[in-house]
Length: 355
Image (cartoon, rainbow, N blue to C red; front, side, top):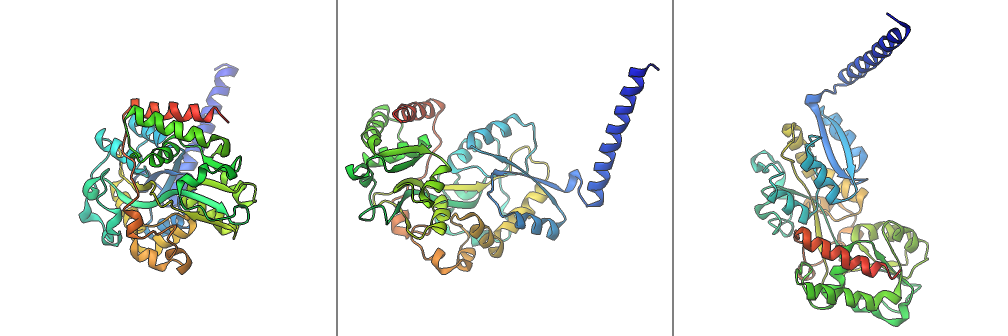
């Protein structure tokens, strides 16, 4: 055997030893392919201590992979390269995945604590009868403002168009959400597929353009917390973090209504460890665990006994747990055709190019 051959053999031996050592370590810790749950989730969207608690309580090992958009999650699950046991898509994406036959039906007989989920969060149009998904978190799109930097509370979407807010408003970098603001302002559905209505909504947003300081994502939190912006359009959970760090901030759901979104747990069709998946679903249905998760994340929990365990300042805050009257004015996003998604994105891009 020549020198190169001996070197190659040595490398292979080292690699095999490392692989064997890793496998043995995992086995010694109780981790094998058969008892590993693979969770596909948004980044920082579960309390890490709950993962450890679940592992200790059940003996399952949890492997968490993250995504940054529903579309990225959909593509990876559709490709089927990784067998995820649970995923956390949003409402319109659940509808799309259901239509594409990418989900396993939820066997409700294997759930303990399903009755803890409040009726307003069940049987939504994107998943009738919750045949394919279990509510995880929900929230709204709204307005956050700084009472030291504005002279009166903002209560309507139309307030964003007032000339006194020129160059003072941060808006979220989301085509669907900002087009929704324009559509609601024009009295249209947030799921409109009428090109004329969509162009009119974009034209309405164009009228607000002089008031927009920036179109951003996570940066909104820093700007608002540090008093560097007066007003922003954002999501309720993001607002919760801002409010916790600045007593002068207030979050409101405009009186005309808004979007209410849902992130639900689903079992992808390619899941290999359904027993572990149901163990995790039941673990998260426990009120104590759901409440702990809600406090960590900041979004609203659909678990009613869990809500009762939250601090009074949180559970009684209408910005995060609005009345049924307000809920009735909120609209849920539907799955749109690729052509419609493209039109929404194109119109929003035209709006963004002004900044």
